[in-house]
Image 1: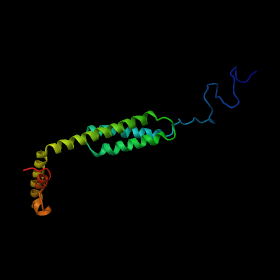
Image 2 (image 1 turned 90 degrees about the vertical axis):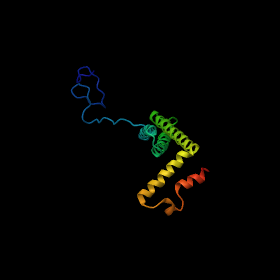
Image 3 (image 1 turned 60 degrees about the vertical axis):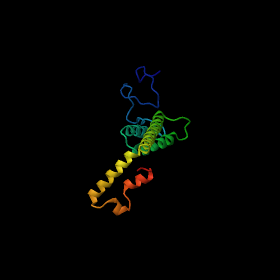
Length: 158
């Protein structure tokens, strides 16, 4: 029989203050457990999402760099586990998606430019004009050939 605790069963390893159920000062609460690689998975997810968003904003280098880092961090976060965390999978998918979208935009832009060389010729002519206005000498004087002439030779224009 327990005459000291008014009917409550008291384990010898647990101290109860004033029958309130709260542990005494001697017991510390354990910090929350973080799964191994969770911080890498979170970083992969954030970088993957930024990669997709920066692709939408029409940049070239940022999505390639961030997408690649997101994929690497997602793979590293897995470690020796048999499965990948949800955040790591999101980072992997967004990183790959950002890379593929960026690659598609880059290839289609280059195909458009090279299929319409007159646009490139106009840009080269504008460059030569602006170069001469800014520096006071033509590109032919400095480089030996103007950019417009180089574009005309490369694409067999004129």
